[in-house]
Amino acid sequence: MNEAKVSIMRSEPAVSSEVKFEEFKVPVVEGMVVLDAVHYIQNNIDTTIGVRWNCKAARCGSCAAEINGSPRLMCKTRMEDAGPEVQIKPMRAFPVVKDLVTDLSHGYEVAKKIPPFTPRPEMKSPYKIQQIDITRSKEFRLCIECFLCMDVCHVIREHHSDYFGPKHVVKIAALDLHPADSVDRSELLHNEGGLGYCDITKCCQEVCPEGIRITDNAIIPEKERIVDHVYDPIGRLIRAARRRKW
Image (tube, rainbow, N blue to C red; front, side, top):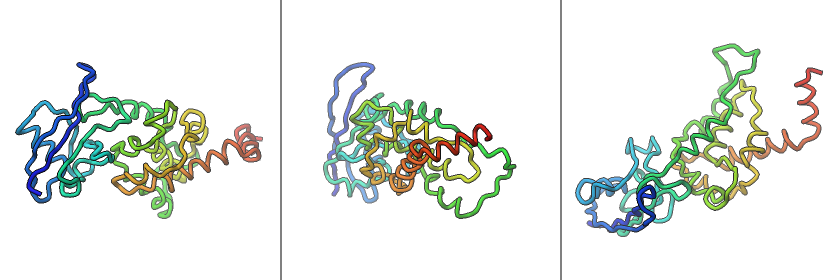
């Protein structure tokens, strides 16, 4: 494949309601990724295309987009895998700023609602924990905040719900697995976070570029934790008694 047709969705809602696709012919060389193709177009054909990127090494998550209908990182998708005709759209779960750039500010506002790591009063720094506890939550620390799991989530895409989304459930799961943490975040996830809306289709898990088992190791355990902490009457009585120091 020496050349590819790259079609990019163009729009700028702050200026116009027009949405269109523009097609460009891009020369393809061995090892080229989709982000290289977008850069070629920017540098040689149309300098006005809006695209967000930073590291070009699949570490920052900035170049997330929908490539041929699939949420992916542009820097991690090879042109030879994308094919001779490549369509690139912005993540449709978020408002578009310009072309391939989306507004992710809502996600960061949700992150502010999550209580941070709060050690138990009897624990003193440095906090010593077992290696097995470090290993259990290690995969959640791999999250590069690309928001691809949020983009593919049909609850976020198609429903006006309060669901925090898989990215934030991963963050909460990482905190909840720390043996020194003292905060119960189950009621937050249940009441304000809308975790009940998730029907565990595992679509978020499938698109994660870091291979985090979002559904299996974060969402399902958090759902189980909600059942234990919110719906188990005996457990609720015990926790209420502890809070009252009976």
